[in-house]
Figure 1 (cartoon, rainbow, N blue to C red):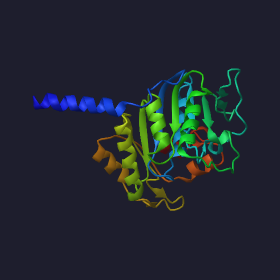
Figure 2 (spheres, rainbow, N blue to C red):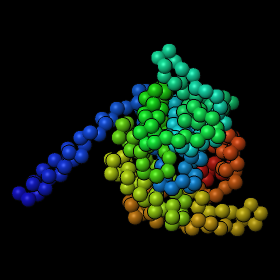
Figure 3 (tube, one colour):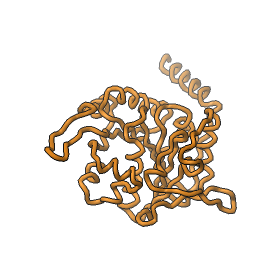
Figure 4 (cartoon, rainbow, N blue to C red):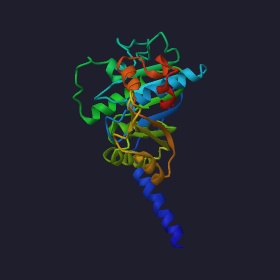
Length: 273
């Protein structure tokens, strides 16, 4: 029948397209991988990734959480978590994870290209070198036994996103965007990219949704209102969070003391998670 022929053609097409793609292999010791992505830079993706990873670790002391900074060109996790120094090597030559901020970071481990280069040094690499670096960060880091590995993706839909989604099984992706129309265009592309590579999109987070004046409490939608909610409805996805433009969130990450840990009782925390 016509339907059976169409199905046969789709199967053959899928087999042809899958040729040459790397086979997905789990990261040793890691149970679940969640990626946080955005099509556009500057929407607060890394800040959100840090606070989510720390919240996962803080809310359940039985869970081990890892945070991978996959932004090769612009790593920011070391700054946000106040982590410095060179990673150590195990006898098997694998890079050890870096346990950070020893005062409060007891169950969260992180790794970033920022540990391997000078803070002001640019990474001037072509795509193949970037993909090789991502592979090493995934496979040659001694993550131990993790319940969750949160991966902070770079902006866009390029080499890093493909390398991660095609090489390891990913539990799901979370898309972060501001309500601004320009950011939403790229956020939609990011969501569609993950769907094309068969990574479930868990939902969207609307960041910098509103600014409240600390003196008069007047609210201003600097980047627009409800743009991410409208996009989620269009894509048939859930809204996982609605985070305002809040000075405490910015200040605490800049100082290396993310708000989820340094000010757990503050209003900003209830707004983040």
